[in-house]
Structures are given as structure tokens and as C-alpha cells.
Amino acid sequence: MTMAKKIETTQELPLQDDAAGITVDPQEISKFAAMAEEWWDPLGKFKPLHQLNPVRICYIRDHLAKRHNRDITRNLPLEGLTILDIGCGGGLLSEPLTRLGAQVTSIDASHRNIEIARLHAEETGLVMDYRHMTAEDLVETGARFDAVINMEVIEHVADVEAYSSSCAALVKPGGVMFGSTLNRTTKSYLLAIVGAEYLLRWVPRGTHEWNKFLRPSEFVDLLRRNGLVTQDIMGMVYNPLRDKWFQDAKDLDVNYMLVAEKPL
Image 1 (tube, rainbow, N blue to C red):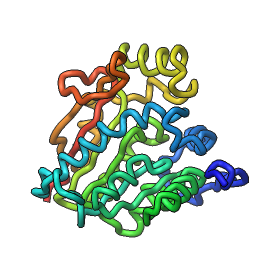
Image 2: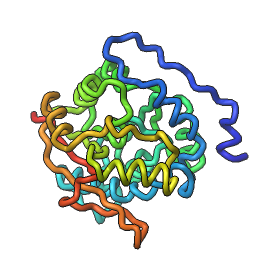
Image 3: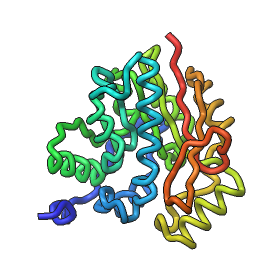
């Protein structure tokens, strides 16, 4: 029986959270829940994330290895580190980070995404900690992590300020947060929306809202207001001739990622 068949009757469950400043945008959750079965199809609606994944994983691995004096050429270079993957979707980042030795907790506001992620982990023999909850929910438990992963999520939340505050609260003193999003530029509108959504059909129309994109300076300032100091910013650039993504520190025009530290 295929994964898609197993979750055929799964319904989206509402999160019970009446707290002020809740960051979940129901329309965004429904949008990604509708595509949930395709999370692990490398040629499906999440193909761009599959192509981005090696770049994102290398960035996270290399920064954490350097920070904790680990050798990336050895097995399990992230062993012993606790990582939180916020908005984990189907687990595209969570599973590789687990295979690198990290103890990964993965949360998502979509129940359907979590079910997909759990099923895929079972099929691949990985023991994963997937939870249907928000960052705000997790803050209330007192949990803190060596690294918080916040990749391609912030442009989809309802309250950026409240969401960033929750993410920062989940980072241990001396820990780091990794983030990625799209820059709010004319180039990003032409490539990420007109090109990717309407011309090339890489992702469904309406996946992104250009006015929700954050300029790097805005992202850095947002983190600073929540006690995090940005250590590095890296662009991610697509090469159509090689059909591949690369890191490029000089090109932040469309996609970029960063790492920020919470001082001791």
C-alpha cells in the first residue's frame, strides 16, 4: 500500500490555541496540507525543495560542525546535538539531519504533513520525533535546542513578530537559529512568482505572496530585536544549465539563508 493511499482519509485537525499573537495562518496551512501526499515525490509539487535540500543541509551541517569542532568527513558529525525543525512539512530536512546524528524534534501546524512525515520515517526505518504543534506551543513546554531550523516558513506565517519571538525563545543560550526565505525584490517577483508559479509551473499558483518576502536587512533586524546576532548570510542561486542550486554569498536577490547566534 502506498503512502498516499494510507492517508487518503486523513483530515486536517485544527490546533487548539487561544493565546494572543498566534502565528498560524489557516489559509497557508490548508494550502500545504492539500499538497501533503507529494512531499517525497522529487518530481512533484515540492521538486524545488528537493533540489534546494543539498544546499540547505550542507549549510546547516558545516556551520554546526565548525561551531562544535566536528569533522564533517566522519560518520554522524552532528551526534549529540539537539535540533528543532519548525514547519518540517514531510520531513525533507529532518530526516537527513537525523542521519547526520542529530537528535531532531520536528513540528508542523499541519496534522496531515506530520502524518506524511511519520509514515515516510516508518518506511525508511528512522525513529523520528514528529509533533503536530506550533512554535508557541513548544515554548510553553520549556524546551530549548542547540539549533532551531526555520527554513522557508517565515514568509507563510500570520504574525512575523510573534513567530520570530517564539523561534528565538526555543534557542539555547549559545545556540543558533538557521533561517531562509525570499528577498522582496523585483527579481524575486519575476523569478519566484511569475517564473516559478505561472510560467514554469514549478510550484502551484498562489504558493507565495511577494509582499510577505523579507529583505535580508529586515530579517537581521527582526532577529536582533529577539536577542539573536546574525553570523552569516548566504544566497542560493539556481543554475538552469545544470538544473542545480548553489550557494553564492554575493547574490541575495532571490533566495537566501542565514545563521544567527543567541549569546550566552
